[in-house]
Image (cartoon, rainbow over all chains, first blue to last red; front, side, top):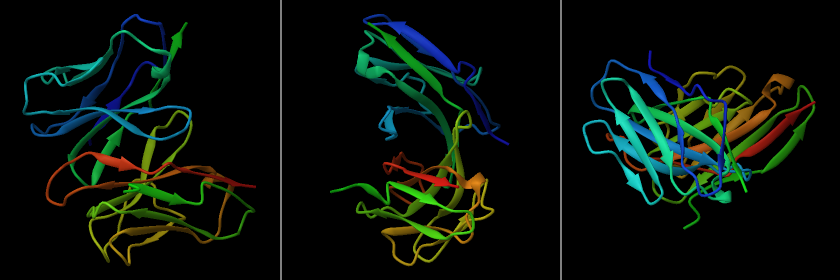
Length: 113
Length: 114
């Protein structure tokens, strides 16, 4: 069965610094999708970034980028120039088929002024 | 375009009471989902639907029922609420059938069962 593991329950970063959140997953499939979602105190789940496994190039969205290591089954999120508004829970998610998304347990990110 | 909406946003029930949570999406999405979120456990899938008139069980379906009579609506019912069902409930939808795409989430419903 597929699993998603986020081993860092909580992380802190100084404003304007860079932080990396870790995510590992387990699957026997070769074609799948990976996501990072942000959940601020408002509870709204917001898509941060999306990676297709067949693409070797790491996805990037402004200050957010991923390090996708397919062989190692690792999908880390790097946030550059951290801002106070980045403080939130971050969830890593995996899907192979649209009816089954697997979420990690989340990492709480604190941004220190 | 409102996206995915959920009604109500908050609810307090007594043990044994029933209620229905409503999820609506205006994006003509095929797939819809109900999750529950508990501290330290991420999101767990309760039920999902791959199209109008169809439903299927997810990871934690016990104590819940669902219906998808219209493509845009997905209802989650609790027939006899229990304190273990205290949680935040999220609805989500996916754009297309037959492909894997990004889930769009509603704002969540915080349910407390006393």
